[in-house]
Image 1: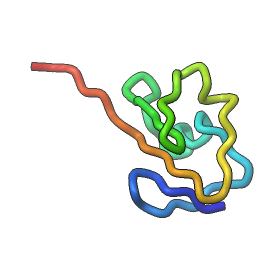
Image 2 (image 1 turned 90 degrees about the vertical axis):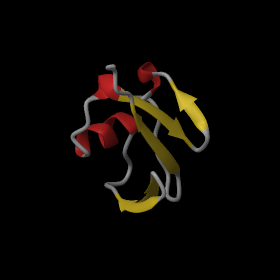
Image 3 (image 1 turned 180 degrees about the vertical axis):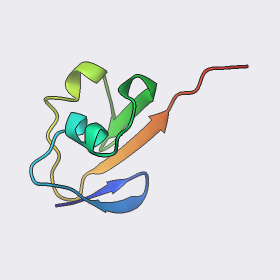
Image 4 (image 1 turned 45 degrees about the vertical axis):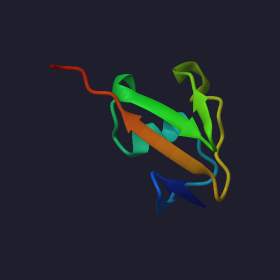
Length: 66
């Protein structure tokens, strides 16, 4: 299946959840905000949110500091 991640085409296993994508990309969940097809998701939704071919995912990394 193909999805769009931050504007770039990405192939993933079918089917997969947002949580699975975060794990596949080896990202740190605590540092992420995720938007799925234009809707911001709470971290608790990631395991239940299945992706479909053509979905658009925006991964935003939150950085703290001064």
